[in-house]
Length: 221
Image 1 (cartoon, rainbow, N blue to C red):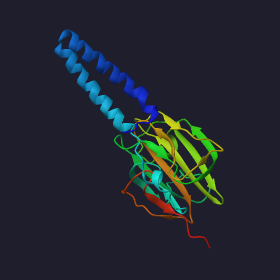
Image 2: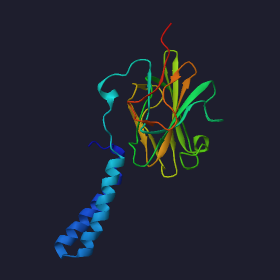
Image 3: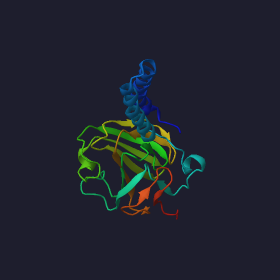
Image 4: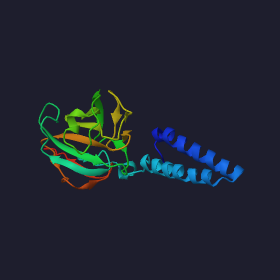
């Protein structure tokens, strides 16, 4: 199982402590040292699962040019009309995905193109499933343009997520489904597509980052 590099600092501490307690138990025979090692190993196991980085369909087969893919694993909270005061300036449709603490937290670009804008805004740490989190929480916003097509997406932290990792910036070329960063411990992602796109998911639907088609561009005239 591949683990995102952002996870190794978190894994190192409990693994190191577990190894230390295990060595102490072997050297002294102390049952308490052996018992102390198990919760640390369990924590290490959870962190490894949280920071897992599996391959997805987009890593093997290039997505079609009309496909907008889910940027993350999770459950669709919004599909269609944008929440009041949440969408960027313009006429957009919104798809929001809520990530639980057991979902894959590696984030992917929903559509291909050049990053034309990138902004970071500090904020609150409300629960990511609350609608207020979309405009009050800490977030990183990216605009991607491919010709006359533009998609906007945001990484938004939740009550447990306290850091956003964004690994692309203005001028970068990204492919549909390409890894662009992650959020640490529970969060949401918002995607905004123009009105001409057809949203293909519904509220309550589970989606997979880099695989589930959340919207489609219309066929060229």
